[in-house]
Image (cartoon, rainbow, N blue to C red):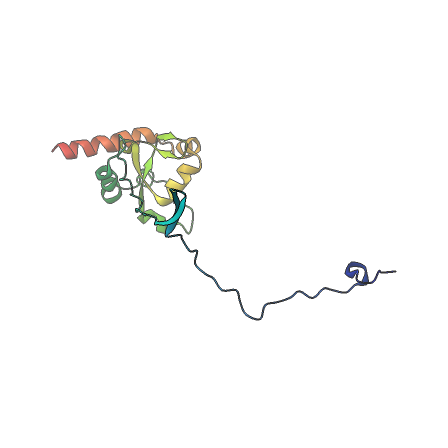
Length: 159
């Protein structure tokens, strides 16, 4: 037997109260004044707000944006040139060349730009999924490819 007012056993569903109008969003009000005590007297003093300065991008050793741009614009994929296959439906990825860092600077850090080799988007994604497996599959030494590519760039820049 259910007790009077006990909705769990009686099978009744409690009716949730709903609002007739939606809640209004009000902006958070920032205080423009602060209270200060001087000589036992409370006074409202305006708060001085200064904008946060944005720090300039730190140039890391080995950072060479000109080389990365040259890899993207004037080089072909190191694997596609040697006849590497791409999965069906990913042919459009051949048109996008990415500078692929073959050496990392640590967890979630990219290595120096002189270790970049050109790879198309499909091969770059495959390389990042498993470097050793990628090099074995395509019989390619990516750090050596990057060194050759950077040597070509240096000769071009010296001329």
